[in-house]
Length: 68
Image (cartoon, rainbow, N blue to C red; front, side, top):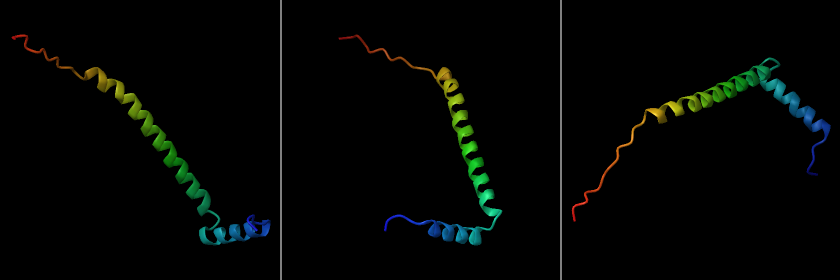
């Protein structure tokens, strides 16, 4: 009752091929792969730039007045 037979999967596959066509599905998967690669590249670029930002930052020290 909860599982689908092979015929159900074949019908779903046939409908997907009718909707998207033979060439569209690999094209979509290629676009997804390019998106993942660019996301990973962007994350690596962010990691590379963060140490530079910490070395150029300056700290201002504040000394409290000791006049009491």
